[in-house]
Length: 407
Ligand code: C6P
Image 1 (cartoon, helix red, strand yellow):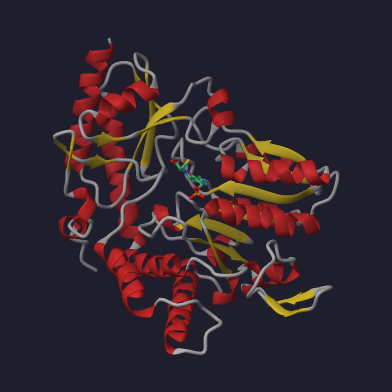
Image 2 (image 1 turned 45 degrees about the horizontal axis):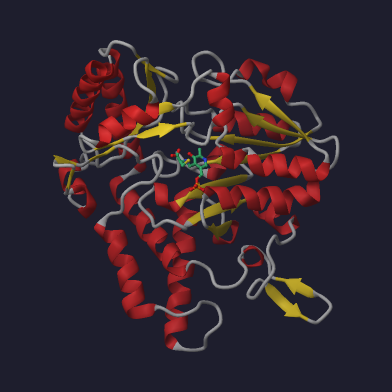
């Protein structure tokens, strides 16, 4: 296959063609939210212009078109993740909602006092707080796989941590602060060996590298559409059919039921039982279009492109005095978190913004990790396939100016 035409691909993103504070915009905040290509914007507009109606209920033409569009999007997501069936895909508002769904619905039924929930020290609050809430409700305990000096997980500790009391092992695929890519298949295998269910936070990976739930061997996997070219408020949770069947619903309402009396109700099979009332139909349509778009480029090519930009950024940041990069040198995702001795991350991010450069500064919803690293936060540049090496060079120049400015 020929290499993607990255210049042509960049031109698919209208928002990138603008000046910010008199400078060409450099958008390096993709780990927070990605930009959207014309194909996704058009798919949403087309849906509202031609097909919009509620799904699964109407006996009229528009409702059946809307239902087809919504369910086609589910089939696309299933294919994108390598799921065995579209019934294993539940549409959500994003990663956070997917993880809360598992913690509340699966957790309420299967986690008891004395059980252990195994997480890692690098989890985003979205893969920590829902488990803390479950632990508070049930009397379960939390345990953490430590992060080693080099920003990878201390996997040699897994044997002693993964005891038979562990009922669920939840971890991120790619750290949003360190860039570490965790060995998901190995972690899922180890979890299964002690009878624990695995939950993968794929917020930073689903749009950046090939993710195949059956090859990874995970039980649940959650991701956000808005970080992979789809609209905000879209996303999905993959759950293995057997587990979804055994779980109770988590939210009650219309559409998730088979029958309702004043006293009680019976529920649909998955995914219907987890999608109460009117879903984000246009969001799902946009997510389906984003999946088509990413598959058109190829996730392996996207990963290679991200990696090349990351390696270049690591080299350029390495030239700056008083700048220290976090995370592993090798095997990392397309983001670089760093600290500049002379400047607080908020000040540095504001300085960058004055030059049209969008970075993120702060704790990145990783407060416990920042505390462990004894940092108030970091500054982060996160890349996507429409970014260029020239933009990384421009960032390095702006950061060099910041070193002089804050000295
Ligand atoms: N991280 C960042 O700038 P939602 O908000 O549900 O789409 O995604 C939550 C989430 C969960 N896990 C990981 C690893 C994440 O990185 C995120 C979102 C953004 O790093 C916003 S804090």
